[in-house]
Every structure is written in C-alpha cells, then in structure tokens.
Image (tube, rainbow, N blue to C red):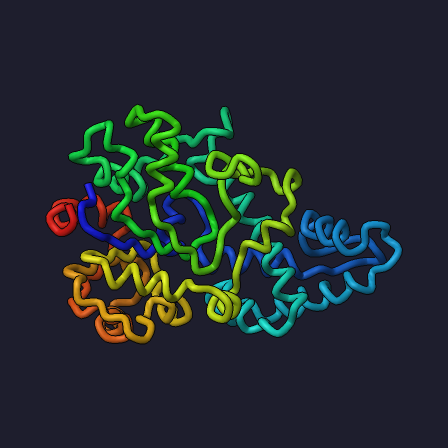
Length: 347
C-alpha cells in the first residue's frame, strides 16, 4: 500500500504499453489529418471524419466555406511545421496566436484519442462498458494496482490511492478506466467502492483530457473508447489545453508544486523529459521540496549521454535534491523489479 505521499509523473511511454500512441506517432497522425487537399469540393487528402466535424460546425448548409477555408489554411500550416517539433503540444504552442490552428489541432487530438482508446489493449470489444482487465498484463498498471492494494483489507479498499498523485501528461483515460474495473473484477469490491477509490486518486493533467468517464459523471461523462461520431468532439476538444493556455490561465503549476513538495517518492514513467513538459515540474515561488527521499525514472530510448543532464535538472531545476535513479527499462519493469524499494520508501 502507499502509506506516504508518492507522485507518479506519467508520459506517453507509459500509455504506449497499453497501445496508445507515442508523442511522435500522434504528432504524425495529426499532421496527416489536418492537411486538407481538394479537387473542387471532393476531398483528396486529409481526414474525412475531421472534415465532417468541421463542416457540421462551420458550414452546415454547405453554402459558405469562407470560415472553413481559414481552417484549411491553418491545417496546411500545421502540417508544414509539425515535424519540426517533438509533439503536437509543442506545435500548437508555436501557433498559439493562430486561433484556427489551435482549434483544429485540439479537435483532431480529441477525435484521434477516442479512436486510440478504442484500439487500446483494455478496450473490451465484447462489452465496451467494461475494461478488458486481463489484457493489461505486461503493463505498468498491474504492479501499480497490486502495490496499492498490498497490505490492505477489503473494507479499506476505498482508500487505496489517497496518498497517490498522478501528474498525467497524456489525454487518455486509461488509468482511471483500468483501476475502476480492476478493483471490481480482480479485487471483488463494489462499483461504489471502486468509484470512491479511483475518485481518491489525485490526478493532475497539464494538458487536459477527454473528460470524465460515465461512471464518474453520469450526466456528462463519456464512455471509454466512444466512437467520435457519437459525441460532440468539438466540445471534448474544449477540455484539451495547450501549453500556453495552461500556463496563462490555470493553477496546474501550483497543484504540481504542492504535490511534489509533499512527496516522499517521485516516479517518472514513460516521461520524455522534453523541456516544455519538464518546466511544468519546477517549483513555484516559496515552495521547497525537502521531503523527497527517492526519485526513480524510466529512460527508454533516451540516449545515455542525456542521463546526467536529466539528473542534474531533476535535482536543481525541479528542486528534488536527491539523486535520481534512471533506468533504461519499461514502466512495468521498473514497478515490478523495484517493488521492494518502493514499498520500503512509501509502504
């Protein structure tokens, strides 16, 4: 169990274990989606479903494409520059003063992530309302939930994650969907207890998400892996934030800083340590982080020559004064192999 405060910093590499796209993969997919080319009004290139969404919103009677053309031009500019950046987030930050580019990018992200959830390992094709918990074998979520439940009595399951904060840089709802159903199917707790436990998990999302799941918000929640045609994708896109939006108008930095200030263990899972994302982990004025006793992290596919600069950045810029242990292993291997260390630190 997690008896003391622990913070998980979750990047695209962690969700990739569940079949979600990595940052570069999502970037390239989005670039192809928004590069609209036509012969007359016939689409020759670009994503037809995304075009239909735009037409419903801005040219429903197909009589005036003036507004649409501004999005087509924005899409062309996004496409031509997207490959220059390591992620969609950074590309949208670059175009932050171009309203149509940002809107188009966010709608494309929402559409693509719903489809990605549907293609993920835990999407249950036989019963879409439930997670395919068994299919999560070999991913970090299995040792994560096992560590959380170890040493607990069933009547205390609702408090399993009360000392856990997840700073999730991904848009998907993989973590919440899996935990809610894993607790019910594998640990035999009621849906009410499962909802309480997952609701007690503090999740901070610097870039937003696709919104609440239906069990969490029965009035407006969106089921995991919903078909884009069945929901208001533009409305979901409003839940996604660019780097510019979250730094200017939210309290995300403050929330992250408070969580890291209280943490006794910080674990980076599948985090790429790109500067734009890493900067969100820096302490705000007046915050100090003396309690952290251990920092662990995965650095799969990060060149070894970057490891020492990353460690230096973690210790100094992020204010986590203990030396980080960075390992070139997967997220599931880190949580599985270092489970004794994790348990001794915060268990």
